[in-house]
Amino acid sequence: MATYDSVADLPLEIETVEFDEHELELGPEFVRLTTVVKLGGGGHEGLGEDVTYDPLDHIALRDAWPPGGLTGSWTFDSFAHRLDEVELWPSPPVREPSIDYRRWAFESAALDLALRQAGTSLAEAVGREARPVNFVVSTRLAPPGAEGPDTPDRVLRMLEKYPSTRFKIDPTNSWTQDLIDVLVETGAVDSLDFKGFYSGTPVDVETDPELYRMVIDSFPGAWFEDPDVTDETRPLLEPVADRLTWDAPIHSVEDIEARPWQPKMINIKPSRFGPVKRLFAAYDWCDEHGVGAYGGGQMELGVGRGQIQYLASIFHPDTPNDTAPSAYNLPQAPDGLETSPLEPRIDSTGFRRRPASS
Image 1 (cartoon, helix red, strand yellow):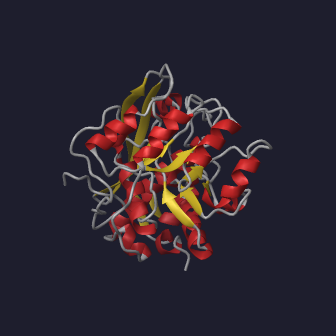
Image 2 (image 1 turned 60 degrees about the vertical axis):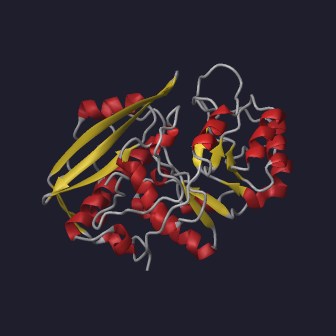
């Protein structure tokens, strides 16, 4: 049975639609906003997080809140179809991928609510055991917009405080071989993200074959995510095709199948897939084809972080999941953070992971 079929017919009663807003300054040119969707019904509340990156999209949604036509009696599947018909975007999004991010927020909130109303958990519904989650800390060496070349200081400070930390790092055009040698010496880098599909964002990286060559030669055991495949980079990438993974272009099974090389590992970011049905189909496809998966985050500031950790715990707990607790994204990581692997700590009902203090 397809995984989605195990949740599709869950009854769902929605009486209220509300939101909470979150904001965090992460650098001189980057203030992170997210919106938590709250669906209420039958004495329960379901939560999901809209991780759209453009502040204007969040502001427009809040000014026009709430969208109509969402209250009533549904199944989870019929509510998902209803989202095809209602206006979740009072104005067109700044970036097209945001459409899936918002869809994920509403569907994950609805799934959380439907499971709570049914008195069951997501793990129980899909017949999977929640297990401890390995994670990596995903970071650039300097915040977007920072002046000067990258340095290894952020990684070294993190390792001094949390020696067992593993990393996924974004190479930038300021990288030198000397810098790479310091990172290699730590032995803590599991993957590197070339950001080859980004344009017009604070994290753009110009495709540079020499940068690719240095990184590929220096990290023989690492995964390489989202390279830009060009005539110049293809000869460098072909010999390491088994270690290439993909993130930004992956929104469906069809996108996985369209990669220039059949992947051995794939980054499954739930919010990139949008509809739960599309996400669960990707998990099923990976199981059927023997392809590994790891979770990916979107700098969630609220309940969404725990939800991607939850999904990792039941679908791919042992891979280099980009699902570190959100506080690892702060310029200075505080004391007392959870370390890898994360204990599942899932609620007995619904689709949430409890914070460490509970």
